[in-house]
Image (cartoon, rainbow over all chains, first blue to last red; front, side, top):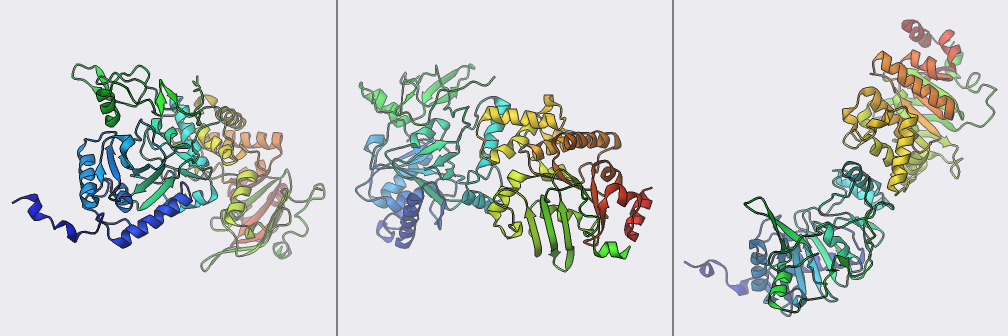
Amino acid sequence: MTLASLVKPQDTYSYGFLDGHAKRELRRRILKAIAIPGYQVPYASRELPIARGWGTGGLQVTLALVTPQDTVKVIDQGADDSVNAANLRRFIARMSGAQTTTDTRAATLIQSRHRIPEERLTEGQTLILQVPDPEPLRYIDADMARARQMHADTDYSPMWLVLYEQLVRYRRYVQGASYPSLVNGRYVMSPSPIPRWDTPKLHQAAHLTILSAGREKRLYAVPPYTDVQPLEFSDVPFEVENQDGWICFRTGARQQFMNELPQADGSTRYELSDTGYAEKLLTHPQAPSDTYYTEGRFYHDGFLKPPRRLA
Amino acid sequence: MTASSSHPAVSLDAPRLIESPPLVVLSNVTKRYGRITAVDDVSLSVYPGEVLGIVGESGSGKSTVMRLLNLEETAESGEYQFDVPDLSGNNLFTLDRYARRKIGVHHIGIVYQNPHLGLRMNTTSSGNVAERLLMTGERGFDALRDAARASLAASEFPLARMDDLPRKLSGGMQQRVQLAKAIALKPRLLLLDEPTTGLDVSIQATVLDTLKRLQRTTHITTVLVSHDLGVIRTLADRVIVMRYGRVVESGLTDQVLEDPQDAYTQQLVFSKL
């Protein structure tokens, strides 16, 4: 008995797995999300052959947008080869006939969990982020009705209280992921769950970003060339992770986001988190130069200011 | 005796020495919870710089008056006037939620009997105070630290513990953090809802001392709710006595406590003695 004999024939599925109504609804929600940057649009999250929490939100958006002419890249924690990424990529390819790739520059649709690639995305590319928790205010107030009221009132002062507590206790911002950011000067969103390192990449980005939470049934978007400002105090600027002196043991790369690999002898090795980028560094003698960060410097001024050390 | 209970505000309400118009006026306010009338046709005014005490037994409606003054709830009927710029003449009960919240943040500070109502227990004490400034749009970290320090110092809180969590503080210190939070934005109206109830006597005395000193230095208009006549006698200039949601007597504190007219007030004063 083979797997092929167990599954239904290909032509009994709708194109892209989801039925026409589901795809139409999703596209309408996506349009609304693009029209109101950072606003969480509710949608009817459909059943998929993967469990909630494994990227159903991102997968539904990908399936609603994919065409046979598209090239799809799927990333999980920066890696193209993890089980989840490989499964999703195979499923999308089988259900849509789209090409797949691990090359960031060649992809038209990039579904990602936890990372934005190191190479700069360009106009026409769409980044789809899988989101576990779309509500940045949940940490402040577990009551969703009150959270919606706070969004309506633009009453985000408790978010600064969280940052205040971090500065008082640790003398710096310690939020590791989902750093709350103000989109287009109106809605605070959770760029979930990308590290602080990736947050500035959303500001005035050339590509379209769609963030979708399947379990929470909400999606929101950052259209191209939109302001995305990480929350910060006026006298203590936002900072990305400090990884000075970390060198990738595979490629020798520096000043890109690294995974820390503890070794048996107690030492630590570092490796590039973005495996597609690492692959390019290894195979091409000429390294791609159009990365977001070069020698620790961001490609545009953005909102990044010189850091301040608190006493 | 009966005359004073049916016309509480006529003869005793406004001593002639106070010439400025009242800061706060509640007129004919009624608040019901289902079949229970918690506040029944209550009128009161608070003049700038004075301390108005409200006494009464449990269930007399004094805490409901406090919630109404703090704009946490609105009344079924009656008016709430507050003498602040661009608002005078408006009935605050008819404003929308957003406008009411704005007035509450800028012009009213409150200290609850239960510190869990007024404080975030898992946020540092200084953070609790700083939150008030954050609400008005202050985004400078140094400015927030300075303001929190100044406000905590004004409420005589030990500054070495300003970054401790309130749940690790004693009851008296928690009340001082609440007070610092309430006065952080220099509000026009300070509401004290049984601020020293539940503290032991020596701590109660020091907290009262702080309140007294604060009142003497800042002349902040205060409404103080207490069932403890000692607290009222120490702090309040004028007092109103409530029972069954109505005002039964009002007047200068010494006058009411030394020479109570209403039968219930007499009972209250003598049971205390």
